[in-house]
Length: 78
Image (tube, rainbow, N blue to C red; front, top):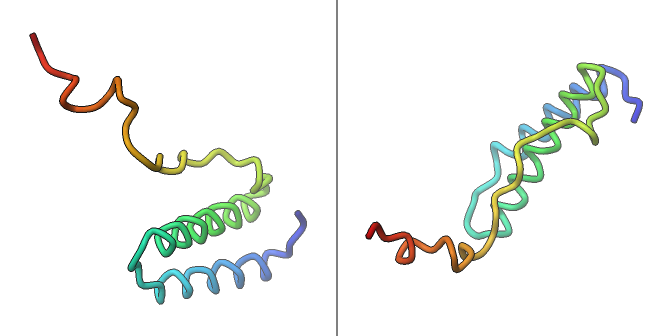
């Protein structure tokens, strides 16, 4: 993606404003927050001259229960 530095910085500012106004009340809001944080990371990568879509980022949090073989009550010490 090709964006001018000025446009990318403006987009980062807008996303950060949205993040600051966001109130987390449920999981959907949390997912939106994580998406907006990813947007800021991708835009910053673009400003550094990297491909934002291919930049390496932290893996998203896993949803749901732990796999049965990793549940706490099964991890007892004999």
